[in-house]
Amino acid sequence: MSQVFNFCAGPAMLPVEVMKKAQAEFVNWQDTGSSVMELSHRSKEFLVVAAKAEADLRDLMAIPENYSVLFCHGGGRGQFSAVPLNFLPAGKSADYIISGSWSKLAAIEAEHYGQVNAIDVTDKVNGQIQVLPSEEWRLNPNAAFVHYCPNETVDGIEIFDIPETHGVPLVADMSSTILSREIDVAKFGLIYAGAQKNIGPSGLTIVIVRNDLLGNAQLTTPAIMNYQVLAKSDSMYNTPPTYAWYLAGLVFEWLKERGGVKEISKINKQKAELLYGYIDESAFYKNHIEAKYRSLMNVPFWLTDDSFNDEFLKQAEAQGLMALQGHRMVGGMRASIYNAMPLAGITALVAFMKEFSAKNSKS
Ligand SMILES: *Cc1c(COP(=O)(O)O)cnc(C)c1O
Image (cartoon, rainbow, N blue to C red):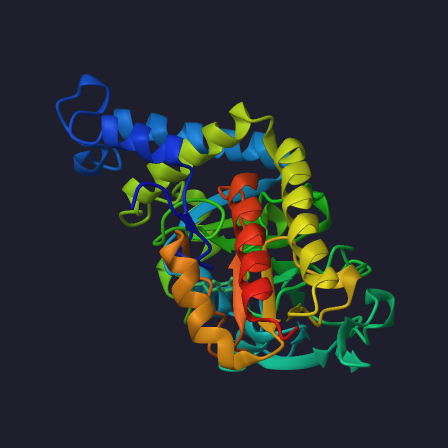
């Protein structure tokens, strides 16, 4: 198949320009005679790659000076443990906002390390899922931190307003929304994201943490998860995932060449509007998230008659529209449309959905 559009939620598609560049320098990187993969993480060559990636990410997200950027192992779920280990001292509790599948899993993991106050903020009204406005969340003013997931990858629920926590550090799992739209990093104590959605290949996790929050880790915290240890060693306490770090750097360069987060966010909005717009006008497909909380990155949708599901997926794949099957927990379909998904992918998907509905609707 010549070209496909890959709607996988993660690992997700990467920009083809990035993969071609990586391919061209795969065996002989910058005339070193070696692959980037074969260089010591402490070599002067790799240190340049590492520093450039960090500088570009800082630039893309306008990360203030008093924040450290860590390049970690362990994925999003690794951070489900690392956050309470580093930020939840004995005798304190942490608020966990539950808005879908991932935030619930984060809360369950955190319970292993301390006191968790789970706060459910979703509601179903007339069959539509809504999120309680953040001013109405019953936050504990003495919490060690507030954890939330601005974009629920499985459920397709996105919280656009940054909650006001009145000085309590705000921790955000941005695995599936980082770099998709502009955010004010200064409002957060910590942001983390597994790379495999909007940054690069799996195996790398980005943590952005305000420096004054470092140094309070529980004594049992593994050193490789200790933010202070990682910050002091420039994320090289142990061998970092060097090739993933390099590829993330290429993605950051790619994004900068395209005008950065501001420009890509316009395209992301356009992509999402096109897809939700069609779903709403069609009687054959539906999405049941209240419009205000619909994810720009992960668009779940259901066929009104789910006996067509298998056929839908089969025909979509035959047209090069891959990985549209919804998450096993919610069923139906899901189109993940991260930064690397071009507008042409959405146009192709909508055209296919129209054709499929026309063929299979009862007249
Ligand atoms: C994918 C995802 C995770 C899990 O990431 P892993 O790297 O597989 O551990 C956690 N949170 C969110 C919001 C995600 O989208």
